[in-house]
Amino acid sequence: MMCIDSNIWIYYLSSKAKEHKVVARVMRKTLLEEEIMLNPSIILEVAHYFRSLPKEKLLKIIESMISLQNVVFVGLDIPLLQNSVAVLAEYSKRGFGARDATILASMQQTGIKRIMTHDAVFGGIEGIEVFDPLRRSSLPT
Image (cartoon, rainbow, N blue to C red):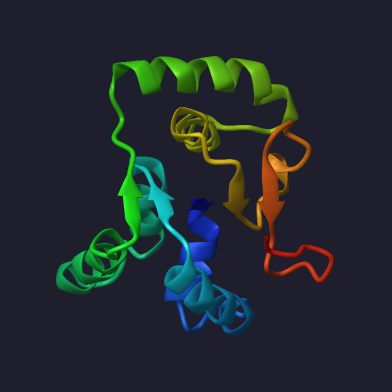
């Protein structure tokens, strides 16, 4: 199982993004071969990026994410909220914000060790393998 960060979803879903071509190739393969973890923070950040689209188009984009057969959705409940705050307190000095904290707490809760992201803040966290499809030295496992 792998977590896919919102920036990767945005590059994948936005054909106008300069990163789209590289990310789309990797995402098509990943979505066929992996179980994917989503949480409210990831979905809301993607929705925020596309918020200027007509409502129907925005809802269709989000539906395309959450309706995938291989998606595991981690809901935000009180224990996850508490763990997210603990993660935020631990990693805020390295650049973590609340959204990143909920992603890492969701990964910890589900035992996920891999994340696809273009956000360097996840690098160097013990037990987490970061795959950035936009870096040549980053290889998927």
